Amino acid sequence: MEFTVGEHGEKENWYILASTTVAGITYLLVSDSEDDETATQARIIRELPSESGDDTLYEDVVDEAELDAVAGVFEELLQDETD
Image (cartoon, rainbow, N blue to C red; front, side):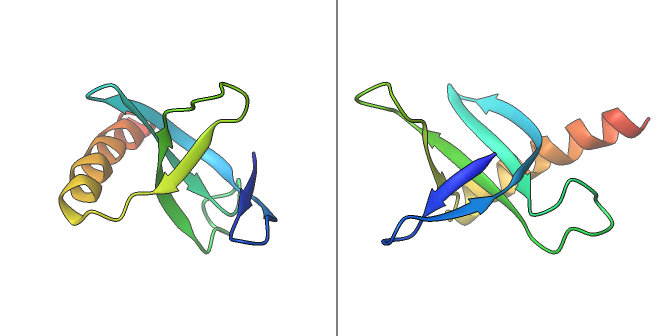
């Protein structure tokens, strides 16, 4: 998935590893590589409500409590996939 980031609209490619919805908010676990062994960065991003409905907007989850809670959900999801 290609994301436009920063003030200057730079484009970055991120790969969706998992997605979940918690309390009506959609979260994505994304990585800079499709392969877990070559990934150097991962982040959890939150979908923002879109006023126009055209582009979907995301932001990094920075609140520690929210990040810990959602990371726990992703950990369980990924563990279930490997079991």
